[in-house]
Length: 301
Image 1 (cartoon, rainbow, N blue to C red):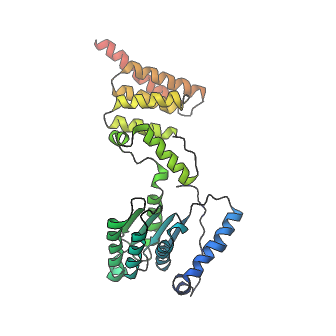
Image 2 (image 1 turned 90 degrees about the vertical axis):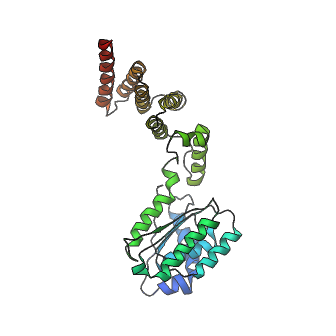
């Protein structure tokens, strides 16, 4: 996930009912008009915001989303204190908003610990979102059969952040057909552009992405396409990349083209020597393995 500033607001004794129920509007006003300006004044931020809460404050997270989704970018509610009235409010929100660009992650612990009066409406909300949520809303509901009301907090925060920032981690491409379906490199570049706008980071397609795609193509029996992709990446993006020459050599080996694999590994070792790469020994070993393959092939012939 992106580097983040975590602000934990103290849950003082006796303030739950006041902050999350009776005066929840004042509590949200405190967050927006006091806490957030303080953080912005004292730290470097980009304006991308996540709201997390557990139990009573989890209900506050859901209600904040209902009142004005644009208050935050991500909403994570762990084991929220839930009642059926929230379903009606969510339904009104979804009827009025055909585009919601936020992410919403909510969980619920066991029925034994929370009662069916909490679990059942949470599951009803999940069904409602399945039917009515716009595609622009990234959402997930997680039932936690091994966790009660208290232990669900840490699990939900971890899983919620993992789901929320899935697009930050990398491409939603898992095989060569996915690559074709998103319009090949044009789709990859579009993904990185959107990611850059969302998280205020570079829109360049990084070396690791090309490596991952290359290995993915090979695993899916598309070594020729892997060669085409990596040759282009070396030529136009990373001419000094040791690792891309390693991927290229592996792709040629998949094609049983030992001669081209040897040439790619030669370049890999040369670049590694020039850069004092810490894995030079391993790269030289790969080159020797291909050389031996070529010698063995000559002997057999």
